[in-house]
Image (tube, rainbow, N blue to C red; front, side, top):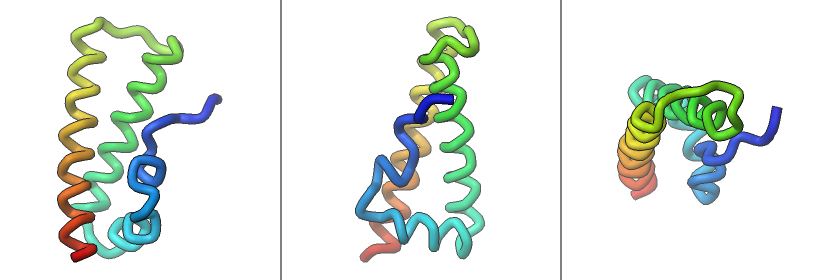
Length: 81
């Protein structure tokens, strides 16, 4: 399988250690990170044409990924403050 772009450590390289720490210490963060990972993998499968979906479905997944990423970014900034 090819490299999956947009992984959290790639999106927030300056927070890689904090991401790992929060995944193990904060259940809500871990749930968000898992959801982000799942949606990101779904998008990657669509982009690489491993799976097919409508444009509407792909757009909804992208919006979901952005909402999760935004919430994760807020949590990272609060934890880093």
